[in-house]
Length: 118
Length: 114
Image (tube, rainbow over all chains, first blue to last red; front, side, top):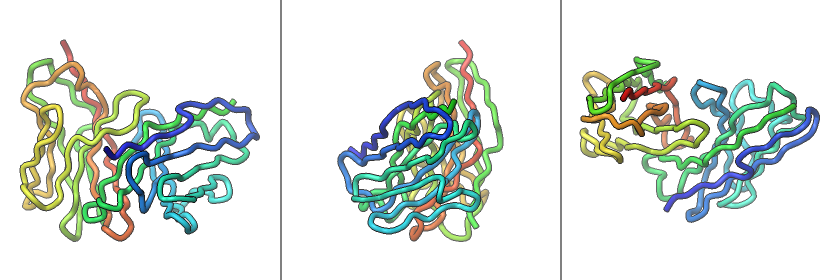
């Protein structure tokens, strides 16, 4: 149980285009989903917190107009990188916080999406 | 504010020898603590979690960790390393129940030599 999927697993795009990444909780409902980015050999950096039916909360320094987050249902959140540039190339990981895990904040992580912007 | 410090960026052990990955945390309340493992180009897998129950927590693949409040530590151990244990390990503390945010340590790379 508690499986989170991401699609696509990897994507290559041209500079200036937009890329959408999907995050789904497959067998549970997620009150909250989180989006992280990870640069090579570094830790995860939280980008934003996404609650179903409301606007995402972005961390300091993350451009909300560049990284659009939509959380349309309790099982799906999407991250759209708009007008992507080479510096946006990174490993993007989502996680989901299950309704039943509220007491101890466990998050279930997706397998990640490797974005390469040419 | 909560924070977590992994004391070693890189640990190298021989196969069959014990593993110790050190983690210290800072929290103004009783925290939830986690250890995650990440293999190259993969997502994170939960090894174990501490949620204010037993202080000695057993996880998957023979790993365990002990919560020591007096030392604000949550070190990860395994009696005998296996080649497949080579990966990146993250110690994580929860921020608080309202936000659900997790605070990640910088990670420790575990190398296992044959």
